[in-house]
Structure formats: C-alpha cells, structure tokens
Amino acid sequence: MRAFVVTKYTGPLQETDVPEPAVGDHDVLVRVDAAGLNQLDEKIRVGEFKQILPYQLPLILGNDLAGVVIEVGPKVQSFKPGDEVFARPDKDRIGTFAERIAVAESDLALRPASISLVEAASMPLVALTAWQALVERGNVQPGQKVLIHAGAGGVGSVAIQIAKHLGATVATTASAANADFVRELGADVVIDYRNEDFAELLHGYDLVLDSLGGKNLEKSLRVLRRGGKAIGISGPPDPAFARENGLNPLLRLAITGLSFGVRRRARKLGVSYEFLFMRADGDQLRKIAQLVDDGVLRPVVGKVFPFDQTPQALQALSKGGIRGKAVISNTRHSESATDTRTSP
Image (cartoon, rainbow, N blue to C red; front, side):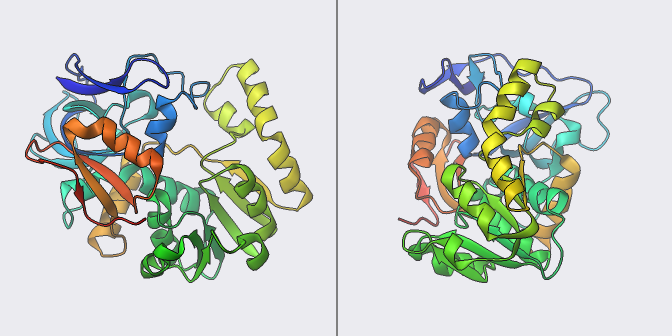
C-alpha cells in the first residue's frame, strides 16, 4: 500500500510502501478517495506538538478522510462494504495520506449525500473543532456575540456558519480580499486584520475562537465581557488538557507553565481561557452531515491536489493563501492540482 510518511521531524514527506492496516473487531477499513489537509499535519511534521502527541516515526500523516468502506470488523454494526463515509480518525490512529486506513466505527459517519467525496474530506477536523468549541465548550446561545479569527480559513469558514446557525452575532478577522466571502458565510462584522485592530473595535463579546495564538490570543481577551471565554486551538495547552490526556506529572507541570501567563491575564480581566484539541466523534459528524444536507453548512474547498502531489500540497498549505481547505484527491485520474476557490 502506498502512503506518505514523515521519517524525522522537520523532514519532508516521502512516498513509500507500508503494510496494510490491521482491522480490529470494531474497525472499518476504508479506501481513501480524498484526504483533507490541515495545519495540524504541518505542526506534527515539524515536531511542534511532539511533547503532547508523542508519535513514533516513521508516521503516516493525515487527519481527514472521505472514501468507501472495503471491509468491516466482526463486531461492526453500523457500516457495510460500499458505504461512502467520512471521518477524522482518533489522534492515536491518524494516517489518511494513504490508499487505505482502518478507522474505529465510533469515529466514522456516512458522508453528506449532497456533496462530493472531495468536499466531504474537507470537513471532519475543522467542523468537529468548530462544533466542540461553539456548542460543547462555548454553549453559544441566540443573541450572543462571537469573534472567530481567520474567518476565511479552514476552521473559521465552518465556525462562522455554525455560529450563525446557533443564532449568534458573528465578527471575524480576514483580509480585505476575503471580506465579501466571509460575509457570504454569515459574518456580521468583518475586521481587516492588515489595516484594523480588532481589539480597538470590538467589545463585550461572549466568546472568542482563536486559531492564531500568541499576541493575537492575548489581545482577544480584551474584547470579552466579564465572564466571557476565549478558546484557543493553537495553544498554549492548559492544565485541563494535560489531565484529560493523562500526561505525565513533569509534562503537566511544563504545560501549566506554558499557559500560566495567558490564564493569569484572563483572570485579571474577569474572563477565562481554555485550550481545545478536538477529538474524533462519529456522532457529532452525523449531526454535521445533516446540517450539510439541510443546507445550513457548506464546505469550502480552495484547492485540490492529486495524491502524488501530497508533499507539495502540504507546502502550499503552510504558505497560506488557500481559502477554506486544501484536499488531496486519490481517484488516480487527477493530472494536476485544480483550483476551485483561491485567494491571494
């Protein structure tokens, strides 16, 4: 089986032959027809998360997939060969930059019927991230105010749509070139991040979803009302994340230190900060698929690459400028990368 692996941190992706996936009792073997690319893939490749995601190398990258069921384990009840599915595999079982992958039944869902496999592959990680931030952690209610950073990106473009579906007033940061695009997604307030300071213009927000970290996260605390919450998906990790993931005491201490500054600043402002590392969840994916088929959510695919250009696709993603998501198509008939919606 052909797959793209990273053999050392910061090293390039390499195409190689790997063993066929083992299919457990509760596993579903899926032919990967399309795989979404995520910033997480690049962060894993360069070793940015190696302390909290201690993968063994060589490692097949890839955190999103859509494809067709080939085989099911003996205790699988919800899927059968021929089903078209999509998933974000569990963080300990990633590897969608491959021809086939075994996925736990609980992490899988039938893909939305109204969109293509390529479009379906763009959604799992970003849609689950947005759902878990806005619905689970944020408990967003009608009439609340939500700031979503990087609204034209993978997470942002889905989060805007979910926040509007929940009845929120949505502000977002984007380039001037993407202003009309994010308004079409549902943004009520658009801040041109190159020429405007969101922290000077926005006040009294209930929730911020921050995908950038650093100074952007620190400034985001200032736009919140007292009691408001900032949820960061780029870090720094917080003590709750360390506890939930069973990290060793030394690593827990280090993580507590990493987020101490932002948590202290949040407390002084009467707000809170939480780190979110999304989890695989087939039940939530089924809800997301229904929203897609109901016309509430639409995927945003900015660029499609053939399977053999996976390394180039990851490089393009790291350079930025792709609206929505980039996706790898493994249909074997793509001759070259295809632009669908791109931005400078």
